[in-house]
Length: 473
Image 1 (tube, rainbow, N blue to C red):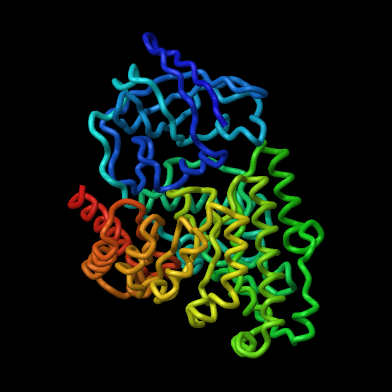
Image 2 (image 1 turned 45 degrees about the vertical axis):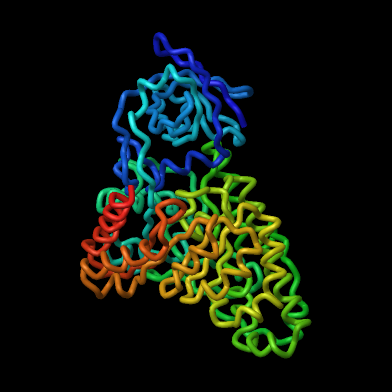
């Protein structure tokens, strides 16, 4: 999608061509935002904060004015960087769904422009950026702020929007994450909970909702005959997607757009929730059952992801919010349980279905929270994945060597984050980054931190990343 931007500033004559996907505005709500208006965890800020006012003109839409802060200079007489848009006069009506720029909220975009705008740019290229993300356990939110994670958290439209606003507000006020003074947004799903239930529920798994826990799919332990009878459900008529899709339509009509998506889990994770521990024996003795089960689960995952992507532009922010800092369109398959099988068994039985998923849902990412990603890196690389969650305990140096072109999201241990000192957390963080040996295509995160995790430990992680980046820049 290309748009032209006519600058209103006197003496300026550059033409801007947007080079972003339709989900670009999601960056403004993430820690990736490097702008002066957002005190997030990005490690450098622009030296120049002068804003330039432009009029935006788009086919089949309305004109709007916004202020723009240019951030990053490149070489050879061209500008390649970021700008942060604040509306001066919000459009009188929402833009069509395909056009995400004209929204009544800030947006961060990639752009190019000609040299006359260098006076608005920083004088030196920024340092390499190491991205940081945190996810706090529902018990943290419940005990600190009284947020309930019962069924209404996910299915009550207004409650979901209010909780999302409250959580974004508290993240910024307490940790400087995200944007100041966030406004309500028409969200589907949640970007603040690690745990998926939609795909298991579609296939008949009962889900338990509690005040202070993520959704808990209760394994069905289906018989062989019941597994072989499984079919891909019709999303429009099967709970919970029937209810959630209806809400997406309502939000689209009310706001003109929708953000968010659903954690679709992973092929092996959901298969265990359907078959139970018998699945491990099936891997050795019943290839017919295994292939049928994996086929049904992977197709259901793909259909859910494709459906929600049509409405919001993303598929996996609910799976891992870190992708907002990398590429919001990445689809992430969760391989939490894969660590319990051998790489050979994975490659023979599960990989063909994962590869098909990757081909269908590019750009592709893999969540591997186990301590042995290095053992799977060689076969994982065949998927062409561009993003990996690197589980605590994995050999980070080997992963970095075997996956040189992919973004590595290095995961700290939330138990250590709860129990250890800030100095220990700082040491853990620096050790991971040193092992990765890079400041490009790398991030640090800690996911599912419990109530009682010291704020000082979280800030120690942030500071360690900042210090490592400073030393390597």
